[in-house]
Length: 412
Ligand SMILES: [Fe+2]
Ligand SMILES: [Fe+2]
Ligand SMILES: [Fe+2]
Image (cartoon, rainbow, N blue to C red; front, side, top):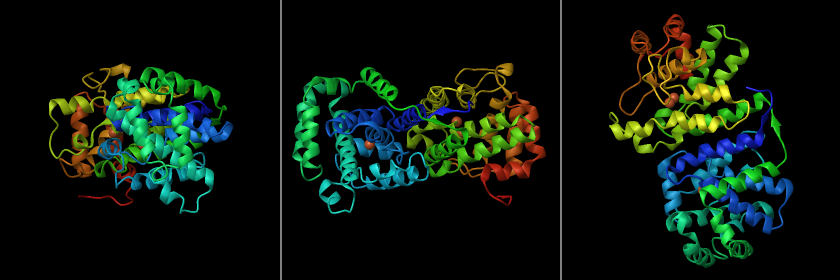
């Protein structure tokens, strides 16, 4: 990990992760960001104000980890359960000093303008929330029309938005939207191959903003919380893997920088799980072949997201390899033996240990002894590293505490 990390790259990588929750409706956050920026420019925003709108729009759905919730949000124009994710996203962003000024901009991004005007918000904050709401609803309509059909379907979308002028949306915002969406450019840019180019130009335009490792670590914790919030069965999983991986690094006397990298890789290894549909993650029984195949996407997705950040090559690799095995029957690369670094082997052990000591929909949490027996079996069959598994055994109580976050050993 390098000393300085570019904040803009981090926000983009994080928006890639959030967009996974759409499963097949990828790039929702990016389309919303593009449309918000186009409206923002027409509203006269520029410089830092426009950057803030752009970043808030990219991250506006950070309160949604569940694919079921996401589905409701894009399939219904006005869903009564929408406020919860706005509050959760607001609270998450508020926790980190680099995102705190974005939190008020997404707090009410599903609140009707009629209600917003009764609230005591600064004018610009109210307008930006409503702008994100408006373009978010446009994107729900885009999903219904089909992204390739927009030049044909755009008039219906514009007519639907116009119907809510003054009720859901601020009159002046609807007027601005009508103006910026009158041309073909607006609708064509929403297509994936054009959107990527627009956003990379947007990112290059922004100010360079280096952040240090400690700052990034706190961002990684925030994202681990989003991943772990996906299901009650994965609460604390990424945090537990991170604590245990770092602890194993220390016990194995790896250099401090490697232990820090293990901590970050542990937090982010399952970013790609945001794309796994809730019903697979929460299935109360063994997965069938199709479901298992879907599950196998996730470590590669984590890899693709993390390697976009300069200086993150080794962390991306540790995350990518957490389901590989020494005998080469893991996924996604079938990397074996010497192809797996010590750090990758540590993350693999920490991941399995943490998962075994957690309740899962298809089984109860396991005792430390049972967990150890399974790890040993996997080491004996050349899946996990013998030396790392031995270290876990020798420090079982401490590993248990690191993985579960519990201060006393739980002998269920
Ligand atoms: Fe959204
Ligand atoms: Fe995983
Ligand atoms: Fe995991």
